[in-house]
Image 1 (tube, rainbow, N blue to C red):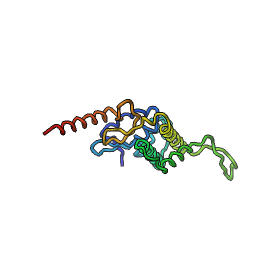
Image 2 (image 1 turned 135 degrees about the vertical axis):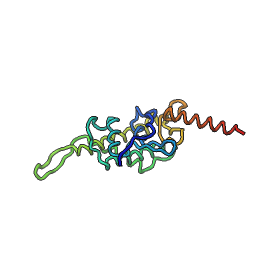
Image 3 (image 1 turned 120 degrees about the vertical axis):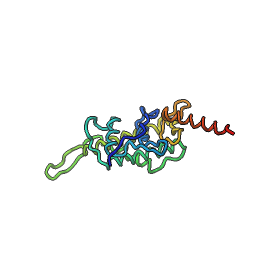
Image 4 (image 1 turned 90 degrees about the vertical axis):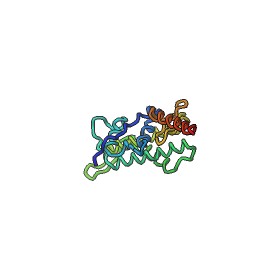
Length: 200
């Protein structure tokens, strides 16, 4: 099936995403009004593009991302979203989400690994390049999530206050929405609610 461009433009990054790539990563599955949904990691090609745009894959080259690798990234995204939700709601962190982030943190090897081949004997080599790119991305995004969830900005973490938006942001003052569009929608909904209460 051919991927088509979303009918609704993708909203800009939420406040805080410039400091924490994990916030942009968690927000890459976007619920929109009217039951629309945009998944910026919905295909391996889209995931590859997202990684390039965020400096997590080489620009100008095809990382050769397979669907299995894209699925790993989507799975980590959902686990990070679970941790963000538990933090915002004041609930204990889910064990499965903690395990997934900790596993991702250990993915990127710091040096070439030792291998054995009957003809070559012992030798050192980096893992498969595509796997290495994905593992590096997983580790980088997991580290960003851990920094966000344990650092001083965690108190500013909140969910967008404009339904049906499902994105997270770092609150600035009284602002509780992820974009101007969501802010306008929230204000319009409040104005409509006031009008309907006062209408006989």
